[in-house]
Length: 250
Image (cartoon, rainbow, N blue to C red; front, side, top):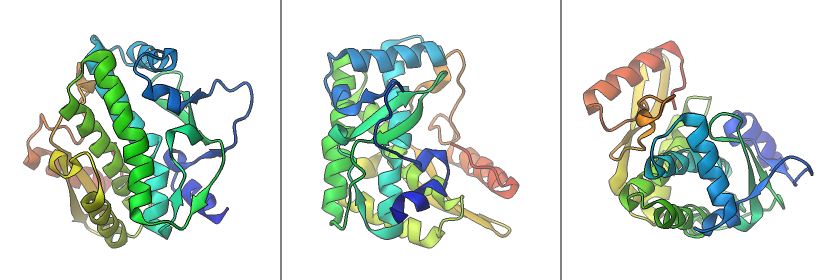
């Protein structure tokens, strides 16, 4: 389908496998919504080993932010570009863990794409997937719900921000983000802000978090470029620098 080819052009973050190849250690995402499942434990254990996190709740916050920024990002970009909805309900999605940190690949059991309203996107990505995962991580690790939902908000914004710096139409993506945010559930609008910056002939969208994923507490981590522990002024200065250099920060 043309939509998947277009997503591939924006980089690996937005690339989707169609169908599950045997022998690739896929984890069914609907199993991650069960707070007591072995699969959720597997994801948390892998993140803790890979990043060197020191607590269960910090591991959960990192997982939430990385998951939301990679696993469902393609659905948000497809809607922003073509106003189509990729079936990202948890039962249709599987992931493969990266050898060090995060997720190496995302697959759709059935590559379904529909001409559907924005409410369908919100339902499939948030209500049926990311927000239940946040609930499961809360139950499993006692991580704070505001911080977990901050990871959801950050991950959703990343789909629009990163693609804006990889050749996407900045105005279209900014308008699409604001439209999605207005329709979103989970109180995402209170958890961060998207800003638009220009340096020379380069322009892009950037996210300012209001919650922390605690990745900086891990043995191998550092502060995210959007980290709320830095002032807004410092983050904007850093964003302007990397925009001028043509770098795409996380």
